[in-house]
Length: 465
Image (cartoon, rainbow, N blue to C red; front, side, top):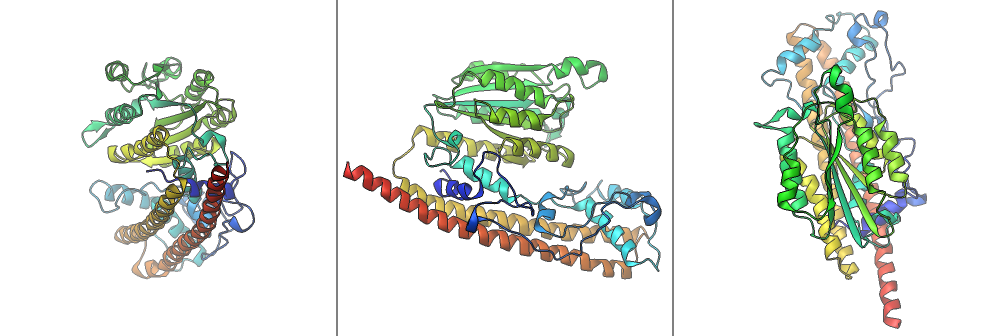
């Protein structure tokens, strides 16, 4: 049910502060033997991160990202325009060819640097969003909520639990997913989530951008439209449904001010007696001139000490980047979801924690054994995700190069030469995945042993009294 305590100890190794640090390779950093290091590099690094128009021969190659050379590069690469789409799919193939047509045909006598520039451009179109292991660890810590040995007190169970969902009601939430709008799917998932929480939990629903429109003339009205439509109280199906159904997606996206409003509302809850949890669901970036990452950091560091988790609902690469920054600034959890099933799975994670709050057991040793199994499957899921991401990425770059050949931008021989960079990146992804897996497993095993030892000592203390 709860991923539990061993993960917390893994976290204790990876972080001594609420804002966890990363080493210079972008991986979780702990103390001494617990530090994860990723100094691998299988791809020749490009010194020219930005290329001007004259050196490339085409403006499409200006500012093209360099290829990943390290694990950190893979983790932090910006997802491509077609990362989640198949290049040969109906309606997509034409768009890919349109983007490829921005390139001049590659000359037969092109030098190595120019060939690599072309490959970099095509790679940037399909680059995948590899999961950051630090985000996985943050999920573990959140799922381990309640353990009194957690290094961060805000994750320990308290007498009261307050949950606020902040919902994006901007115009883009009217986009449809399998016949229903994003807003309809989000509302249904939120209702299911909050209705299943322990009845003692205080819940709140806050919305923003639900007034006005997306026009410039309505910007001020819409950006100021932040409303707590269900104030902290126990769940009532009738009252909550009434609150949930009184708004529809309309305007702009004031994420920063919504977090400010939430902070003001939550200031009444002393963290020594309250666990304060925020879930912000958004499909886009801040559009009301605020700085949501800065606000989230201030909120997280405030006396309220909330856990701030962010869900990007079908968020595009630009939105994902900003929403991840918001979660990282508050040391919270970020997840990208693409459909209702994904969204409900994220809420299920929170529900499990709250169920654990309701019936927390003293049999911590048993919980530790469960944690060992859960931790194993989480690491397995992480490595499987990396495997399929790099496999999908390799297939897509092959498809894009073939489309470039069809468009007479590349020749068969030129594609054959470029395949070496695809192979190097695939090798890098496999090596990085295994490296992270091994180090997480080693840290996990060490911390599990220490945790079991601490439990036995505590049981002994209780027995002696």
